[in-house]
Length: 167
Image (cartoon, rainbow, N blue to C red; front, side, top):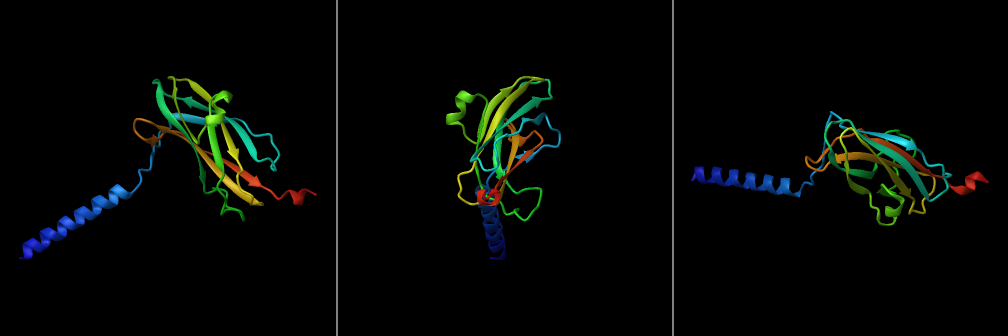
């Protein structure tokens, strides 16, 4: 009887662990060896009060192999802690061609040739009415095959001021 109880307990633990593993979303692992280098080519020149800011970036493949990747832009916790560190969420769009901007999302799949580079744009859109708030957007590159982050991360801070403070 004692063996049946031990076996039953063991099976229940195994079952619970498998359910927990299945319910946990897959988070891409960070690879220390960055195969793609991200650079900011051009910052937004729009005033802080604008609802949209566009940044031009470049992804450089430092390997001798073509890479199938996904560019990702997400809201993140600001590394520069300030009184605005709680932050707000804004919308992001990534696109490689201005003709693709209309259908852009916060991810973009592309192929970067061996030792090549790809320029792209990140548009950050303020869809909130909150003022005097800070947002941080993190841009990174994930390898589509291995589902790991293979680039450095670029953080873009967006401050949404109260226009009355300028009067």
